[in-house]
Image (cartoon, rainbow, N blue to C red):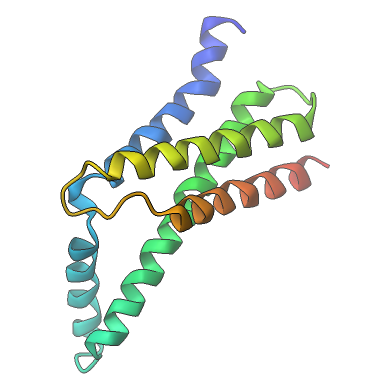
Length: 143
């Protein structure tokens, strides 16, 4: 792959990885997103219980995991394909493996971030599911 093509296909992958890394910092702890969600919900429905807010916070955070890794999965599939129509299944498998590996390293990174839980195997599974969904969409789109 020529250098411009390398940048065209792999720069978006590394940009998404950088975004996910940033989202794994102390800026986006559960307490921070809870405060944001509380202020939005309080504006529209001020009598929402703390329990409901915690459940909503958890749902939003888990949905963000799926969405982030869905985008990463799309970018990885595109990069592995390199613009060709070769080996869609192979590209999808490599993409899922890369997503799972990055999800694992992301959870490991969070172990060292104050205010982050980290090390959650469930989150690795949720992240990987986002990557799997991206592969299903990618392969179906090209068939």
